[in-house]
Length: 73
Image (cartoon, rainbow, N blue to C red; front, side, top):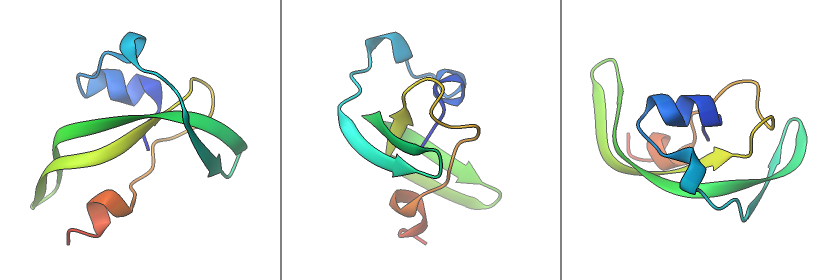
Protein backbone atom coordinates (compact mmCIF):
# COMPACT_ATOMS: atom_id res chain seq x y z
CA UNK A 1 0.00 0.00 0.00
CA UNK A 2 1.42 3.32 -1.09
CA UNK A 3 1.03 6.81 0.25
CA UNK A 4 -0.15 9.13 -2.54
CA UNK A 5 3.23 10.93 -2.54
CA UNK A 6 5.06 7.63 -3.10
CA UNK A 7 2.56 6.60 -5.78
CA UNK A 8 3.29 9.86 -7.65
CA UNK A 9 7.04 9.16 -7.38
CA UNK A 10 6.33 5.75 -8.96
CA UNK A 11 4.63 7.46 -11.90
CA UNK A 12 0.99 6.99 -10.90
CA UNK A 13 -1.41 9.84 -11.69
CA UNK A 14 -3.13 10.06 -8.31
CA UNK A 15 -5.58 12.70 -9.53
CA UNK A 16 -7.32 9.99 -11.57
CA UNK A 17 -7.68 7.42 -8.78
CA UNK A 18 -10.99 6.32 -7.28
CA UNK A 19 -10.76 5.38 -3.61
CA UNK A 20 -13.35 2.65 -3.07
CA UNK A 21 -11.51 -0.32 -1.54
CA UNK A 22 -12.11 -0.44 2.24
CA UNK A 23 -8.94 -1.19 4.23
CA UNK A 24 -7.99 -1.33 7.90
CA UNK A 25 -4.62 0.18 8.78
CA UNK A 26 -2.87 0.83 12.08
CA UNK A 27 -4.42 4.32 11.86
CA UNK A 28 -7.95 2.92 11.46
CA UNK A 29 -10.36 2.39 8.58
CA UNK A 30 -9.87 4.19 5.28
CA UNK A 31 -10.37 3.73 1.56
CA UNK A 32 -7.78 2.93 -1.08
CA UNK A 33 -7.53 2.77 -4.86
CA UNK A 34 -6.40 -0.30 -6.81
CA UNK A 35 -3.38 0.07 -9.10
CA UNK A 36 -0.93 -2.23 -10.84
CA UNK A 37 2.77 -1.45 -10.61
CA UNK A 38 4.74 -2.31 -13.73
CA UNK A 39 7.78 -3.24 -11.68
CA UNK A 40 8.84 -3.47 -8.01
CA UNK A 41 12.52 -3.93 -7.22
CA UNK A 42 14.15 -4.33 -3.82
CA UNK A 43 17.84 -5.06 -4.07
CA UNK A 44 18.22 -8.12 -6.30
CA UNK A 45 14.49 -8.92 -6.12
CA UNK A 46 12.57 -7.78 -9.17
CA UNK A 47 8.88 -8.47 -9.81
CA UNK A 48 6.61 -7.27 -12.61
CA UNK A 49 2.90 -6.42 -12.69
CA UNK A 50 2.41 -6.23 -8.93
CA UNK A 51 -1.09 -5.39 -7.69
CA UNK A 52 -1.07 -2.58 -5.13
CA UNK A 53 -3.26 -0.06 -3.35
CA UNK A 54 -2.89 3.68 -2.94
CA UNK A 55 -4.28 4.94 0.37
CA UNK A 56 -6.35 8.08 0.60
CA UNK A 57 -4.29 11.17 1.35
CA UNK A 58 -3.39 11.38 5.04
CA UNK A 59 -4.23 7.74 5.82
CA UNK A 60 -0.62 6.46 6.08
CA UNK A 61 2.59 7.90 7.45
CA UNK A 62 4.66 5.48 5.33
CA UNK A 63 4.11 3.06 2.47
CA UNK A 64 3.85 -0.65 3.27
CA UNK A 65 5.23 -3.70 1.47
CA UNK A 66 2.42 -6.24 1.25
CA UNK A 67 1.61 -9.80 0.30
CA UNK A 68 1.02 -8.99 -3.38
CA UNK A 69 4.80 -8.64 -3.57
CA UNK A 70 5.96 -10.96 -0.78
CA UNK A 71 3.86 -13.92 -1.97
CA UNK A 72 5.92 -13.98 -5.18
CA UNK A 73 9.20 -14.70 -3.39
